[in-house]
Image 1 (cartoon, rainbow, N blue to C red):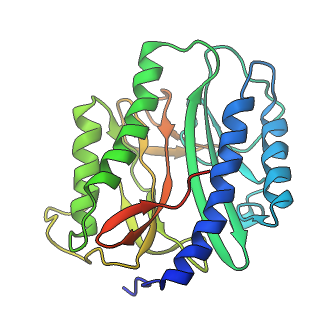
Image 2 (cartoon, one colour):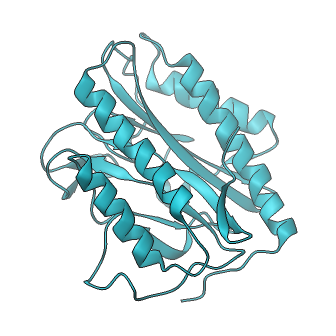
Length: 252
């Protein structure tokens, strides 16, 4: 497995692409209101990305039709924007990618629309808190499998389970690079596999299910739900390993 080690100037190029992602997500966060359609949110983010000189990297990627993955309620990831208008109590996830000067950015948030239930608050908090807990605990020399195991334990301690068969990933000159980073331990030994090194840049993205981890892809070929049929959540940041610690690149 060849995991790229980025030079400082390359990390700055990745930061520039990711800063646009962060800004687009912040724009969507502020404008998520009852009555807004998913297609309107998608168009708003695409306009923002293009106005900052970048391209929406998800549009056309593997055939995805839009700039933003809009994952509503039971859809955990990869939701396709539709004419659906947001309603009070919905949970919506936004996942955005950019390309700027040949370098890629990627991040995601989940949020409630208006007043949501405590269960949904807890569900969203699990994804966000898992992400930040993982980022805080990354150290140069730890193994990616240790990081996966740490996220799995955190999610389970909150009373939820990680979505299987989807994962975080490296990022750089392509939107998805080595390594794959599941939110759960594959195999029995967290002390195996590649180590985290300075200069690595990758995306962590906890994807949270309530009871069952097994994914189902819906008829449109994109929307991913759990076999439990319950609501999910998703958070993501792109991080770079600098001076032995993880630094978030995808902040506005």
